[in-house]
Length: 435
Image 1 (cartoon, rainbow, N blue to C red):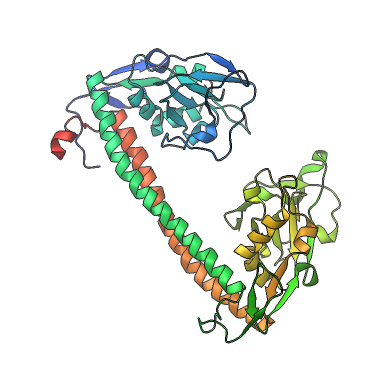
Image 2: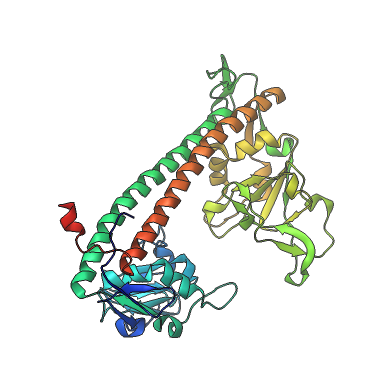
């Protein structure tokens, strides 16, 4: 990393820590940062609440939620200077240095920095080795969590107080520089996604002719107020006249079987692709209509979050012959190569918003069947699909390349923190060198 090491080291006696600077202490976490165990009953306090969802993984940043978090049951109280550490799914690496008084999820341990500076402590508990060690102790298959008994007995490295301050100041500056780069690249990805969405919408609504890159010579009123004009030779049709929306399979949990047929769920739709890492199999007689075919559009039609309703993926040959669950819908049509792009345009999200209300948080087959779309001739549909395929691929490749660079920056950030708080690099003179 371009940083010098300490002149002298000693064996820490802990395998995952390895050697530490000879003048550093090593103490169990429970002695350096004892657990604060003050409980607060939900609904009986006006204290601001923090859940795991309010903490960004690995960075320790506070995430403001759009909606208020209504906690239930018993919460833990914390004070400024306390470090909150997530014991649920520790591999997510969620830790937060509190700068205000509040209440938090019982899945967050409240650590008091009595024998260590809180600013150093939050960095240490986010170090790669510490997180891996905590994660190795978890129990529970679906909701893995670690116990305080185990976490509290883990060692923490303790440089002299002044040195802790220097290390945290060094990390504040260096991670801030990395975070600024990550933020710029993240914004670039957002702009690319906006560009991709705009391109799809303009192509499937006939705002330009993909064969020439120019507007069509003549337009007509579509007859649909929110759609406006379409090319004069295009039609406007409801989906029910070109295909069929089919609601997914309802099954009893008792019918789940390791040797049954795969039933796709909304969770299998990941970033526009079909992920089969986590599937359910059901052993029962399934109607032919509920068996997927290549070219089907698989749609999330019901979910706890409205933002996820409407996410979809085009079924390819590897996923043929599966079924799909009750909270999902398949749209089946010979025109699905074109319709799929309509489903991923502003046209579809706008109509979904018109149908869904605060009381109806789902996309029914009736809603889908009655949606209206502009429809070019078949030969032109093929041209639009080919154009979008090529242009989306170029944009997606750039998004993937940018995301890879973000991932590398995050790895660099984590490695730098780990090296500094475990004494693998000596940063005591960093501010002098910078001057």
